[in-house]
Structure formats: structure tokens, C-alpha cells
Amino acid sequence: MPVYEYKALDIRGKSLKGIIDADSVSAARQKLRETNIFPIDLTETSGEENKVPTGRSIGDLFKRISLQEVSVMTRQLATLLGASLPLVTSLTALISQITNPRLKKALAQIKEDVNEGNSFALSISHYPGIFSTFYVNMVRAGEASGTIDIVLERLADFNESQQALRGKIKAALAYPIFMFLIGSIVLFFLTTFIVPKITGIFSEMHQTLPGITIFLISISGFLKSFWTAIVLIIIIGFIGLRYMFTKTLRGQYLWDKIKLKMPLFGSLTHKMAVARFSRTLGTLLESGVPMLTALSIVKNVVNNKLIADSIAEASRDVEEGQNLSATLLKSRLFPPIVTQMISAGEQSGTLEKMLYKIADSLEAEVESNITMMTSMLEPVMILVMGLLVGFIVISILLPIFEMNQLIR
Image (cartoon, helix red, strand yellow):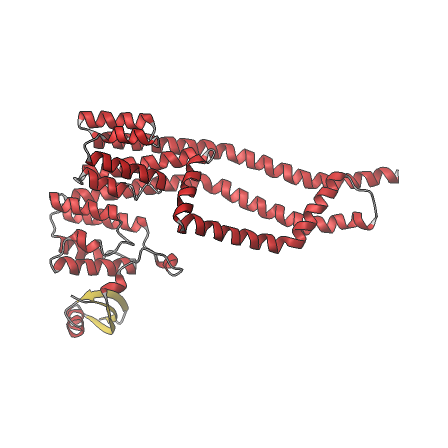
């Protein structure tokens, strides 16, 4: 059934916008009139227009569907289904609550697909930009087991926990990054524009300058003469490295290896990837997704090709009858404590709970480490900025002191 986007007036003359499904334009107009809404403009929105692409464009940055919106929608749908409402009725009620126009259109088309006899999992799989493979497979498992409302609750919990962790990390890093950017801009401005004006006085007096002042003048002159070229090189270098690290397979492997080996941050990246693996796998298994299917999904959410390859290898070994813990231990990318806990879960039949414990433990470690690092970074950055500013001040004041001594 087609979906139409309308602009209309209500009985009091107030402007309205929305979407409606109907067999034809005339049927859509009739539906609206029956609810005392009088359409001014009615445009059919095709399913292909509603499908959110996996790639991103500049326009997508301003109208993308956030993970938080998907989480809220998922929990609301779980609540409606938990109240024993049919899926189509629940989707109809949900659409009226959605404020994001792209998500509203997508849900309207999903509702029509379900109404035509398609499964909910198949209907949402047409929108990979909104619903990930992980999400689709969870829903498919919930439909197969008849526990779709419980699965949706787990999905909402999972998304919210991931959002909370990201939010804590961003909040912890925001202040040091802000300080670094502001400090860098101030130092660049001082060195490029302020210092040359002051040191120009010394040049006019033909005074022999201290080595530290000559060094500062050299740096300042270089930055003043070539700052546009330096900025251009930095931008081109950033774009080139980003292309290599994101668009080429070799570059992706190299970048993922660098992320794991990077001092301080490498350990955090590693723990976050293993935590994401554990929580996602636990959620999938608890929802009834088979182990091999779950592993094939999890390898795409760890955000590291080296770890993804080890998970793919583990999947092949599990298919041949080996234990998951034994094959993960061989990769050396999973800490021994993690593989031991997985082994204990396999032996006791509580693998899902053990995976959750691993994720909770690693996420707590990540939060603690980030808090400690940021508490150390702030004084270190203040010290470094102070030393640099002190270097500039001393370089300027030394010739002035020498001039005073000559005058005496």
C-alpha cells in the first residue's frame, strides 16, 4: 500500500503535516477528510525514497536518525507489544509519536510491509541505515521464539548501555581536547602574529640577541611565511591518511593494528572491543540466535579487523566442534581472564551471564582508566602550555634585560 506525505488544514485552519497510507490519492484524501483534516498537498513517498542508505552524505549529517531515537522507538514498541497489542496496531500508535520525519516515513512503510504479510524482521532489513544486522537478527530470533517484546526490551537496554558508555567517554575527553585546541590556537597566534611585532624592535636596534631569542624568531618567521602551506599540508595529509585508513583494506588493517598498539589508548581500545564482543554475543545468544550466526554478526560490530578475523576463525573452529574459549585463546587477542570466564560459562551452561559479566568488568575498567587518564592529562597539558608560553616570554624578556644592563 502506498504511503503519502500531506500538508493540510484542520477544522480550525491550523496547518498540519504528516503521512498517511492508502490505496490511492483519492482514498488518502477521503481518509483525511473523515478525520476533519483537509489536504492542501498530497505527495506519494515511495519505499525506495524512505530507505536510509548505508553511506553518508552532507545532507545526512543534518537529518540522520540517531541511535537514541531508535532506542526510544524500540522501547516504546516493546511496551506496546508487551501489552498484547498486535504488531500493526502497535506500529500505527508508534508512528503518531515519532517526531523525526525520516524515521516516521520508514516506520510507515515498514507497517505496510508487515500488513502485506511480510515478517517484521524482513521489513526492517530494508533499512540498514536505521536497523543494523545485529538488530534485524535479534528481531528475527524474537519472532521465531514468540518473544519479540522481550527481545525488543533487550535491544533497547543494549543500545542504552552502549550510548551511556560512549557518553561517559566523550564527556571525560571533552575538556582535555578543548584545552588542547584552544591552547594550540593561542600559541599559534602568539608565535605567528604577536612575536614578530615585538622581536622586530630588536632587529632595528642591531643588538646581539640570545640564542633562545634567535631560535624563537626563526620559528616565528617560518610560521609567518609558510603558515598557509603548513595548514594546507595538514589538511591534505589528514584527508590522505583518512582515505588510506578507511578506504583501502591494507590501510584498515594497519590502522586497527596501530589502535591496539598505541601507548595508553591501545589498551582502552582493546578492552572496549572485547567488551563490545562480549555484550553483543551475550545479548544474541540470550535471545535465541544460534552461536554460528551470532559470531558472524559479532565480528562486524567489534570495529577492529584483527579481532574480527580472530572471531571469524573461532566461528570456523566452533563449527568443527571446538569450544569457543579454546579457539579464542589461540588468537592471543582475547585476555586469558576473558577466555577462562567463557570456558567456565560453557562448562556450567551459563555462557550468556558470563559474557555479560565480562562486558560489565571491562566497561568498568575502561571508565576507570579514562577517568584516571583525563585527571592526569589536565595538569600535564597545563604544564606543557605553561612551559611553551614561558619559553616565549623568556625569549622576549632576555634581550630587554640585556638592553637595561647596557644602559646602566
